[in-house]
Length: 325
Image (cartoon, rainbow, N blue to C red):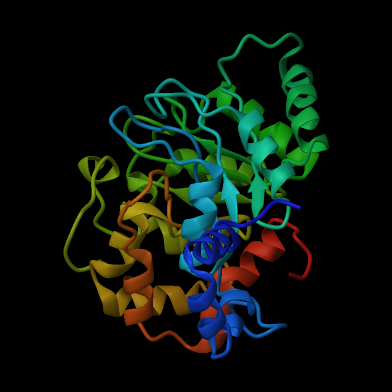
């Protein structure tokens, strides 16, 4: 059994105590404070995070090891986290391959949920069948989904559509990034709509500036690549597409997700309640010490407890087919 960072820190605390000090400390509440569970038995952690990365994502970033991620998760009451590879050259400075995510999840199966990824421009023999054999091999090793799908092509490019076809056939969700550079689309997200319509049995989980800018009905092309501020205009592509297609879900991670909700908190709160069955809590935590606005933003909305429970963990359990936790 692998020690959690919390257990390791407790063990280190013991070593620093002298015998007399330890005896005095153990005679009070110290013993129970050191070895008791962090929360009452039977109480579920608050969050399942559908968007994290391990490794070094961007040049200049500090490396996020599985151990450091676990420590951060413990500090923020996150029970499980999805580990997302990044396999396209436009997606990050350093490629994050599927194998480390699978390895970390094998070592910590109760904490990490691995996804898999392959760039659709990869030289694969056999077209769709070839891609299916590669992705199926990852699923056989434990991958629960595909992503982060963050590729420098139009969202509906034929190469991209091959990946969607494979994920639908295998039966795993796909978490994607959308902006003016990766997973490219236009105002109103017509490329995404084509994919949603073509592959109705594939659960698409949307993320990124272009996706979240589309919460507003006045989103322009420049907004697809940015982080627009100000009041949200009703009639945005997200509401329209979610109303029409049951296979579209939203990943609330990163500055794009938190910003879309906080730019107009009244609209954001109503959106989260209205779309409570299709929203997934995520952070996009990818380096030690990174600021994560989701905790404060969502807490400030004072959502009903049942809505929070769905968004913070229950929807992820359902969409990722995790079973009860």
